Length: 428
Image (cartoon, rainbow, N blue to C red):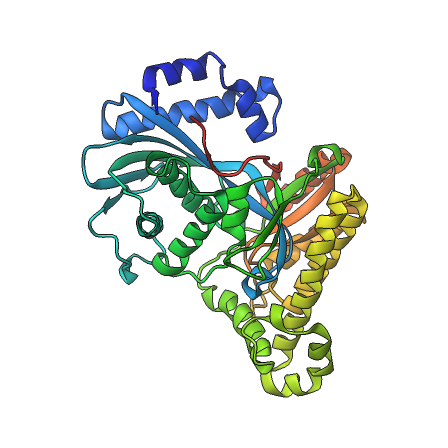
């Protein structure tokens, strides 16, 4: 921890400007917004919890999925990257056996460290994620003491950028920094986040979101063994490609889509079960294709189509990582477009079943096709159905593209991002 007044002075004097520029992929002269964010959370901590002497700062980024759409929950391969939007926190220790987390704009979460068992009544609440992370660290043998945290996030909620995973990774880094001497690896912090989300938050998510938020940069992940995923950082500088990464909010409502999301792994597993396997990753691709006739009768056509998507997109994620590693960005873009077509036609996570009037994601994809004029690439991003579209837009077209998209969807719906080189970490 750092003495608060010294930390405030260092931020104001620009001592961290070079570090901030690297983290957020910006020029040094543009760091004022980011240094002010950290100043604000320190002030928010003191405003909320009273006088502060020593404080630590933490950050965890959101993530973007670059390759492998709905492949992780079948123990497949993905390509993901952390982005330069994050959730940050100012933290101080307290002398109580209580953890208090005040997230800007939300009610305070209060956790009694003597009562951290899962509670179904707390499903889908931030409190559940905090409790789950604390509980897992305790099972690893670490003594957790009381602390107060003030957090602020610019990771867009419901955008497919994994605001919940970023929050889990943030809490994991806070506990790792304060009570575990930084001993827990980024990979294990990701696993702890997934545990909290599965067991305490009540969401059966895969591990890709947490892994990308925790590790940082562009990472290729093979989940064949989920306890020991094979993780490779992809050494590639997106800033030199001549393309901008855009995430476009479709504006659709995520409410009541749990069944749509749950049906995808359920149907994929039904295909795997036909071959007496739990996950599609363990099914031989040739055996699958030679069995489609009987599979159609057993599990139905949509399950078969979704399995086709898995096999093809799983291979594509590996090829995408290799294309970036080899510096073949045009090949990468071509694979991104193929993935987008597969998600729309086979995975079918663009339109909600039976919805005629509301097809926002499909509309955004159509707009990208029109405004990009055959250049760049675009695809449904993340879970789908009501989230976002990812587009790689030539820089010389970016202003026009953003203006044309937002003229239809509304101001602020097209977000221009960068791949951040650092995952979750303790800033000071």
